[in-house]
Length: 115
Image (cartoon, rainbow, N blue to C red; front, top):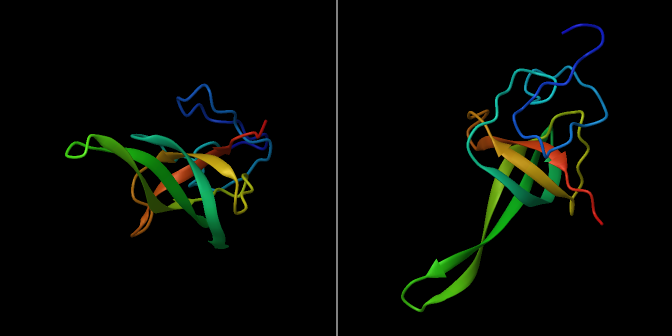
């Protein structure tokens, strides 16, 4: 990339790019990592690993037998680019990407502003 790094168009116009710049090749904004598949809003649970965080995806599942919804949750490992700062409790938007590690197939695209 040039000295003045430009921000890539990731194909999701409602997500704002981060203010900071980075030179990470696995950043969807400043590197070459493509986004495909699902986009979710999740909550960060842990951010102790190097450039990786654990998030909790909570969703409703309809049980046909009892004709009602139940709450379910899944923990996912996500890649955190250096240009985005996350801490436990933050709401973030993640996007699916190619497998980056054994359990990492999502990357953080941005933080959700709290109102």
